[in-house]
Length: 405
Image 1 (cartoon, rainbow, N blue to C red):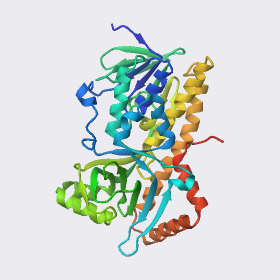
Image 2 (cartoon, rainbow, N blue to C red):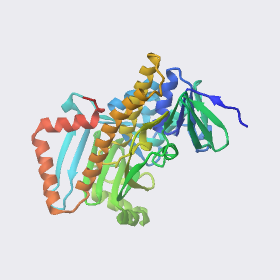
Image 3 (spheres, rainbow, N blue to C red):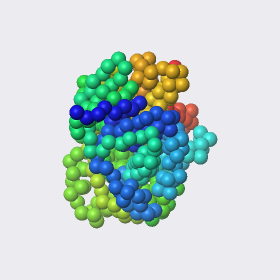
């Protein structure tokens, strides 16, 4: 029989959201244990690549409020050379005859930027490096939770290795196929979009001017997001059949289509990485907590990439739960007490549900060749262009965390 090891909090999932939350809690003095099925990373895997080399194909636009979390845990300097600022968002309703565009600029809100575009690989490396060195963090790799048992005082988890761990709280940060959610018997509603996101890094002939440009096409948005050294990340959303068609084409044909869709906005674009495809879904757990278990990030919700709200919504989960736990402990309250977890869940369920529905419906609105909807899209863009108050409201909603009334 294995010896039971105690910790304050167990986090299932050592991804971006889980590691960010774990580092915040560990810095506050809590003993954090991570469980993750991935292979233990080698020093070579964790080494930061040379600038302007291998950064993967996927990036995330992280808004200013969430960047403060990275400042707090001390990884901002490590990721900075690989990121670029988002000072404006340009939306172009693409049409063969008459494109219409609108620009949302950060300086309209007296900001220097909306946020940073960060390569996913770089962010995860920086977080993992920090976690492996932290005295209050233990990581169990090549492991998965197979059973959960609650008592009035703690939660006990059994691992795939047979080891048993106890803690005050179990946090499920183990992604869209969350084992924690499954073992807790929390239902999830999933919607298939019938789309895939084609992602890659492109070299540009002209500088992006720190502007993220989102073309609206029938298959979905085609978005170019700033990176250093005259490069951009591409998120090209297409219906399944078309996505599979373009994935099967050779590099020259892929580049030709990318250049046709970008309409020479940044001059000639060339593939810096191969294109990868990710199927797109939207989902939402029916509740975010029970007993001594709480869900965050994609274990709680998966958002369509339309509007760049996915990781930002997950990081707002992190900020909210960290604040609730920190405040509870400061007052001598059990961090897994129902009042604490319910307060977190009430705030985050409202915000994540709103953003999930918004991104899903906006995608349906954009990825449609209906003549009526095209007219409505044009009307909407022209209205926003003329009315700064409405434009500013939308920008603030995209940037700001949910505030309870």
